[in-house]
Amino acid sequence: MTSLLVTSDRILILQKAPREDWIIKTEIWFSGLYNYKVVRKGTLIKLHFVVSKQMMNAIEEWLGRYPRVACALHAPTWKASCVKEAYTVRCDSQRVAEDAVRYIQYSFVFFSERAVVVDT
Image (cartoon, rainbow, N blue to C red; front, side):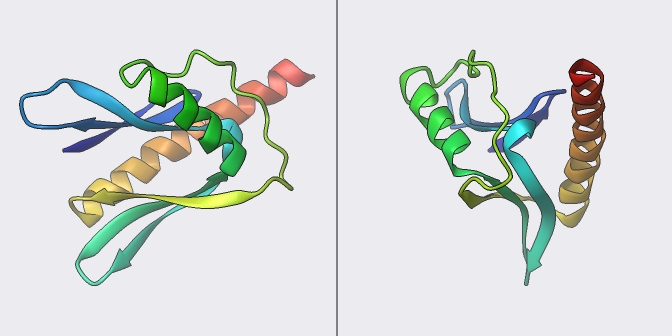
């Protein structure tokens, strides 16, 4: 089972195996998120993210050591020119995927507005 936890700074992708606690599969910090959308291929529905490769490497390194602890690192701003990669999350239905995108859009706007206020 996979779940998303959308915060004002990032998306945590959580995974639960039978008879185990939740672990953090990965994180996507809004500072390294460049695009996201719902992709449907036949009956398979996924959330497709375009993210900073450097960000994902930093997250993988952290979670390799602490799989049950969200990254305590301050998320730097990744430049638009950085190397990007795709990351996908499978969804149970079109409705679930669209709901997730709405939550991500709301939080991403909040993140972006907060960054503008802080930078000025």
